[in-house]
Length: 148
Image (cartoon, rainbow, N blue to C red; front, side):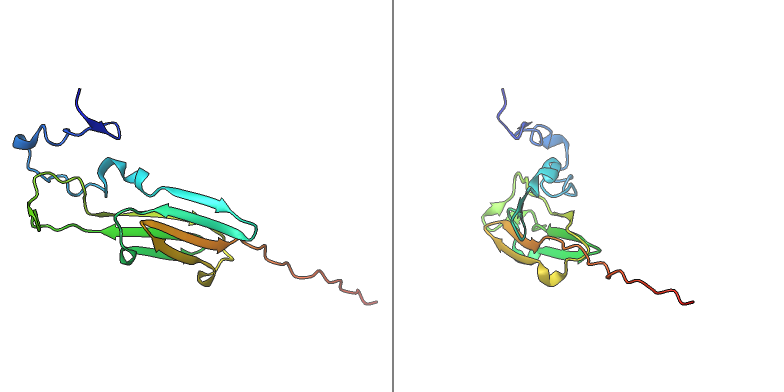
């Protein structure tokens, strides 16, 4: 029985090591097959708004971008790795971290403005607070008198 993590053998990439060019799959999405599970999100409702928490382990604040357009809040995170095959302690023999980017979008409402969204990033968790969308007030109905 081989050791495994997340249901995969730890030796999947190593067994073919002599027969494959090591690192040929560097263009895989960030964190390989598990990229979809990395940007885990929790949404909490409060009386006056919502709190959205997004796990972004291994990212720095400068690598995260937030955009609000047409009621959609888009969270993008991107990072790269050193390309020389060495780190400060020697040659890299096996590497499971990859460069890449990930994006997720959430509809928060067309009436929410950028200044309504408050963001902070601590310990690999992005926290966003934004108000509940308020319904747009319809103009008051006025009666027009018919002359004659």
